[in-house]
Length: 131
Image (cartoon, rainbow, N blue to C red; front, side):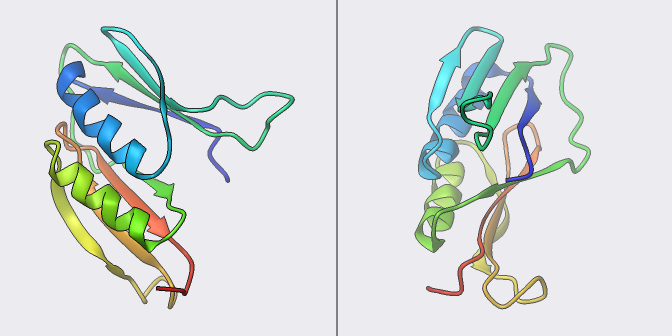
């Protein structure tokens, strides 16, 4: 995995947590810590586990500009992509592309796109050519 860690800003932590808890759980990434201004998902990398990835949410009390930033998360299979999309829609997200094949990337590229409650664009993708 290329990404070691990433941080996303949100304007309302309880609302963001409901959304991000749901979509990260659908992909198998646990919430590992929270406060009133922060939440973390996944596992931090270190000398013993350099393969790990981590996502942080940080409260931006002055608001968030939805500027088409984009983060894509790997899904274990197509069912996880579907679950990611359904979880996001059920927790305040908006569809920015339903689950399905995107053959213009490659024949097995199966992905779904969401906008979180602050307009951050996220994606889940499975690269397997198996349904």
